[in-house]
Image 1 (cartoon, rainbow, N blue to C red):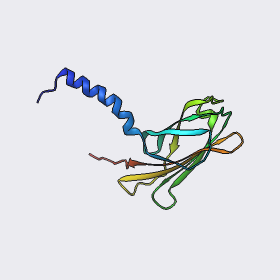
Image 2 (cartoon, helix red, strand yellow):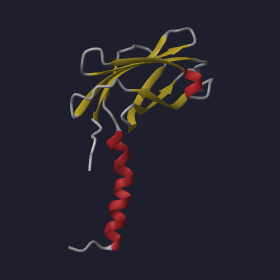
Image 3 (tube, rainbow, N blue to C red):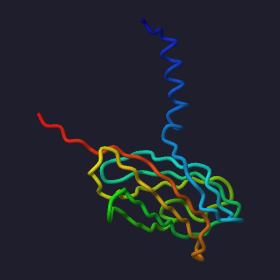
Image 4 (cartoon, one colour):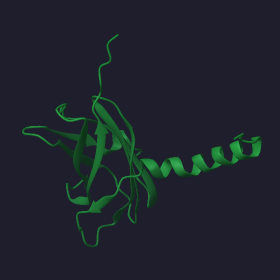
Length: 151
């Protein structure tokens, strides 16, 4: 079966629309009522054997002058966790004006290579400059264990 030029172009265009949804990760809001900050999406953009590049999309109804992002990530296994705290203004331009925003960071992964697929659990909190939690998310993603090929 031969694929025509127009079919190839159609497949290319469809892939441009569908690829971003393949990186999207289901997430759960921790239930902060009345928070001015709301998440609208979570994407795991890239996974290596040491870290994952994560992007959070959201919106805020008030100006955010600064704060921190606290991340705890666990791989299934005893003691397999990493916790990090990032300065919000080093991840995005502060102050953050009301409206849509994107928060992107690279998080170290716990070294768990006992399984071929590793299921990571992430707890993320965004704190404002008064250290009040203004956004809280939980999500999971899977990563394939790196394999070694010898000749």
